[in-house]
Image (tube, rainbow, N blue to C red; front, side, top):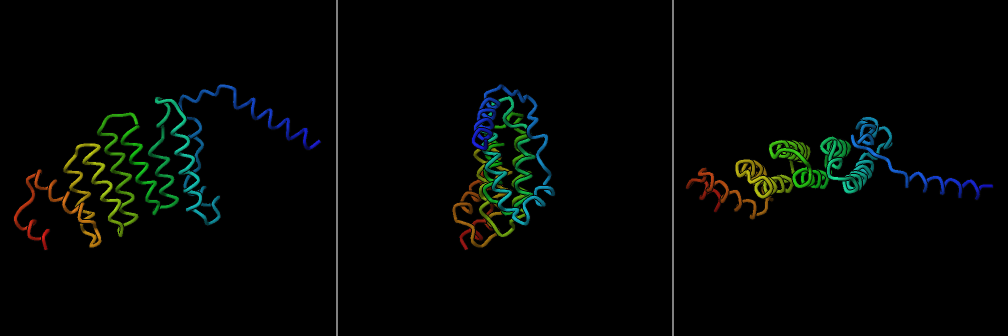
Length: 189
């Protein structure tokens, strides 16, 4: 009897998956739980819950057509980073997906990406790597040197910051006309 019920359940599930399910408004995401609810459901394992939502988000945004694909993208990555504010890859990948794939005007993308990076930098003030990633994304992706300089300056405040971001900051500030002799001396010291 149990085998028959199991076989019937599997057959029904298979049949249901083959039926077309239009979701033009991204209704599946309308029922995404709040960070508070997910924290309660995680039973103290917010990092694990953030991992699960992150994997789900990557899968979700890779399966839908271009017009439906990026609805609620910023909200989903906000949820992940609310669950685990130290989740470096969620900030980086969320910003990358928003920058490269999300529809919308460049200003909207830039604001969404900078909001996510600012949230991550505030959550991880001891990490210069996220500020460096933000600087390069803004410079290469948006061609916004002023914004790249802002993030690079955050990164170089950390004593462990890599020399490549220090050099890039010098080049970018020079292009902006904001690099002086004092800056050169301080850089070489």
